[in-house]
Length: 408
Image (cartoon, rainbow, N blue to C red):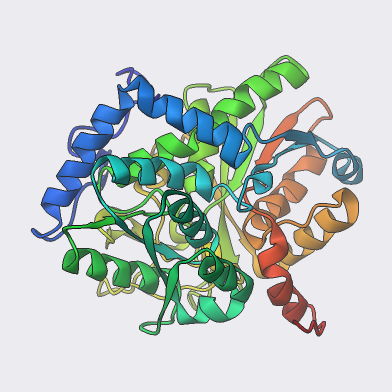
């Protein structure tokens, strides 16, 4: 359950759903009753032992938690510096961290009497997780996915349809995650009576950023006791990739009150963070604005129009970031850096060759930054990186960028 100590960095958001100036609720009048009802239901669930008992049982017996904390010995030896651990959330059922949060939201939806679940997805992992849990509970599932992402994430599209979901390709904009979220919000406004919107990241109107964070915090809570068991102390540095930022916030949040732990979020630098905006590094190259119901850092032009952004990684291809990350950035508690496509591809290949682990392109960005910092750190320095997804879904994308022909 979330920590609400008033002197804690883990206490937010405030009563208006804000982390400092970020967050809040910027939604239509039609959606406000649904948002308030969800907030009320979650507040009740947080204090209900039966809710957490169901979550714990499903996390263990359905998802396969706790996920292992793995010492990447060959990678550590190759880099020649800090000791590197991988939090292996790619071993979860469905292959990513997304199911940690989806379970919680769909249990809430059932408590609220909702029978139709909608979701947005970029890389497809959130869509797969939502379709999976809907299949388990017999709920109707509709997943909005940018048409561009439908093409580059074909294996996950097939998985969603096998699981009984209706996948709706979104052709507006550039056909990526931002556009999918726009259409999901339009659906929600139209079908308020029976529909629950399962948001996949720590963005959107309050209470979604805090609620998703709380469900994903199982990652960091496990890392705390696993590191104590393995090394007898906390890690020195924790690193995670960031699109909207749910896997990162899940790792970061339980460590926010530990000043000895350095926290690093890694954004998608695409082809380079410059004026061409061929990247999705919202904190590195953006400024505050409002998108999808919350105030946060965004990629936007001088007139406040949201820019499309770009990344090789469908899961990081989002022009914004969760509001709590924006707050942590501004108060200096967490550092945020960017990694290019080229650097991520190099990390992807190195992880395959040295550890026998095929990472998703999302955590490959985080690994690329670990590769930069680990060699200069002492051997006793402990780094934990969240391996938030496996790379089956990215094989065709990687092959294309490496100039290798792979036939389906």
